[in-house]
Image (cartoon, rainbow, N blue to C red):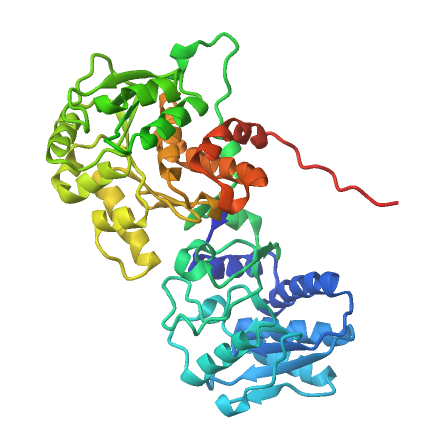
Length: 511
């Protein structure tokens, strides 16, 4: 599913109005009616006090339409106009007049912190103050209003985006944003719902179709792409009946050091579980018995040094190489890594200490092959690209890294981002239980194993991240979040493939 920028969403509105011969007021009525229908379906006329806070632009106009529809259906509604400016949109004014013409009580005007209304925890708030159009700092008394709404701890629905969020940067005041129980957004999701600094303000997200022109949406490249089951199904490469192990490549995992051999075990198992035909682990000698015992399917090559890797010497050419898990940053290891990059001709996945070495000696980035996959967690990425102002600046820095060195950057997190030049892919699978030691090592093995099977590196990164998360989602059904270990993710990789082709279960009707 595409993710549009704020400007692209405005352009989609304009195109829809032109192509469907609508007025902007009619499109607003259509969008707000969809939210009302959702509310009405869930509330079923319940006598809950509903507070609707309307700004002065089109988001406020949506709120006014919802207020009118709620009143028409007998709900207990109190509407407030948040007067933070002298400017009002034309559609806001039209819907303000419509509401006044039918309501027994006109909307209440809020002009300062002295006007903050009483809100109880058992009430409901509809937030229609700013929406996606916020482009300047919020006046101080409105921030106090937002904090007042949050302090009530009642069920809060935000229209399009929680008020206080910008579309392209972190909020000025982290406390000056509505904490929404649910955000109902129009047509397409927004990037802010999936970034750590801004996604925290939405507990639940619902995307509703408001009939924006499908031709315009399909023909317009998205600002980013949201990756779910439907998006990755097209990437899947089925196996041929008469294939043999040689058809699915030879993965090499290079890493490990004394006390950190488990990372290579996890990566090696993952490469097998994802479908690599052959897998070899290149490790220090201290890990030989561990690897041969833990992964009997794997071949093992040992370094002459017992505790860490000092030289990478191969007598075969792997299809794909994953390097860095548990590697360490000993001086001899750094030298071995440098010499390896100079001589390597295979496709690469670099993780963990491999990234830390690149951060220490940035000139080595010039030696990585095109479309190398880097899989940093935020701390490793920061060492690589420097400190960022916010999540949007982080993305720009990752894009610059990708364009400079023609590499794919996988930023691990709750919604892992895959960045290749100006393209952003946002993963939707996975869960908080996967914040556990070794989870990244599993991902390194998965992506390496997919590349070995013939997936191009970008597809391997996108597909691999999704399958990694899906495996974790399957695992927690038995372990729960706290009980999940990285070996559980490995054990469920096969089931994540099966899950791709499961059809949704029909809803059982009660007699």
